[in-house]
Length: 72
Image (spheres, one colour):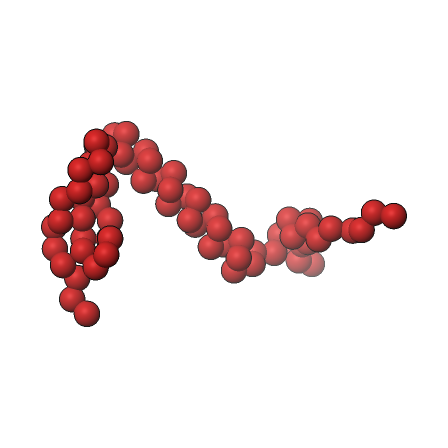
């Protein structure tokens, strides 16, 4: 006998909209951020991000330039 699996995309509200869970929202936001960073890298050749308490510029060739240390 097959067990029913829970498909969150099939669950809808009374007005027909799909439920948006925190888990799904975080997952989609992270996925979108990775895609945006990849596209920005392709267009500009670098992205600005935070790494180990520093604002850094990451270049396409792997070079890292520290811009400013974050204050605690």
